[in-house]
Image 1 (cartoon, helix red, strand yellow):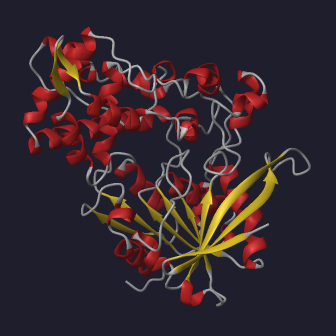
Image 2 (cartoon, helix red, strand yellow):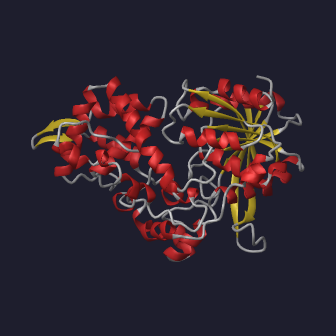
Image 3 (cartoon, helix red, strand yellow):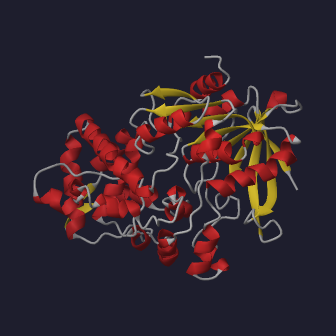
Length: 433
C-alpha cells in the first residue's frame, strides 16, 4: 500500500518492497525495503526517467528532505527520484541492538549482517527497479559508500544503469582494510594540522580536555563513557566542509566553573553525545570494516591495529610532551562497543564479523575495464574519508569514467555544492562538459 502526499514544490510517495534477505536464496527469508519517491509538483504526471540515490555510510538511511534543497532540486528538473533506505537503515528492516536479538545470538546476528554490504544493496536495487521503471535502466547517484555501491553496480548489473554519478565514493578495487587505514591516518593528521593552523587556540583547549579525561571518569547523559580516545574521534568532523568550524565552537565551550572545580559543561556533553552515539546508525560501526572485506583475510579490527603504527595519535604520549593532540575519525574501534550503550550488546557480534574469513569479492575488474555505462565521479582533493590516490587508480580502471577532481569541496560536496555539483557530473557523464 502506498501513501502520496505533498511538500512545497514536490509530490512524495512512500513505497515498500519485499526482497530476499539472501538473493542467492530467493525462496528463503525476506526483508522489507522502504523508499521515498520524489517528483516535482508540476511534473508529477509526466513519464520521467528515474534516478535512485544511494546514501553514504554504511548504515545511514536516505536524506529526509523538505522540499527540494541541495542536489535534489537539480535532479527533479529531469528525474523522478527514489530515496532508498538501504537494507538495515531507516524504515528498511532496521538492524540495531533492539532488533538483532530477534535473529538469535551473536553468531546468528553476524551471519545475518553479512548480507548488508554493497553487493546485497545493489541486488535490492535490481529487484525493485523493474517494478518502478517497467524494466528501463535508471541513473544511480552514489554518495560516499553509495559510490562504493555504484561501482559494485557497474561490476555486477550494468544493464540496469543508464548512467552512474559518484560523489566522493570511488573505492579501491582490491585494497585490504589495512591498506585503507594506512592511507587514512596521514590524511587525518593533515586535516588536524590544518584545523590548528586555522584555530591555534584550540591546541591548548584540546590538550586540556584530553588531560581532564585521562584523570576523570566522564559518563555522558545518555550513558556514553567519554574516554580520551572517544574524544579524539570527534576528528570525524574535519572531513566535512564546515567541520573545522563546528569542532572549534564545540571546544571553546568545553569547561565551566563549578563548586568542585572545572568540569565539562552540560552544553559540551550534550553536543558530544549526539556526535559520538551510534544509536541512530549502528550498522556504520558493525559493517564499516567488512565493506572492505573481499578475500579470506579477516579485517580483524584493522583501524585499531594500524593506529599503533602511528604513535603520534597516542594521547598519553602527546600529553607527556608539549605537542598538539591529534584527533582521529572515519574509523571504528573495539572500544566503541564498550563506551557506547547503543553498541555494547553487539560487541560479540562485532568480534565475529571482524574475524570472518569468507568475504566475497565486491568488484569485477575485467567487467569495469569493459564498461559501457556513462559514468562520472567527483574526487575531492585530500578527501579525509576516501583516499584520493585509491579513487584515481579506480577511475583509471573503469572504462569511460570521467573525473572532476576538485578542492572546492570536502567530502560532503554533493550537499554543499548542491545543484552545481550534480549538474557538472551529469554533463561529464553525458560528455557535454
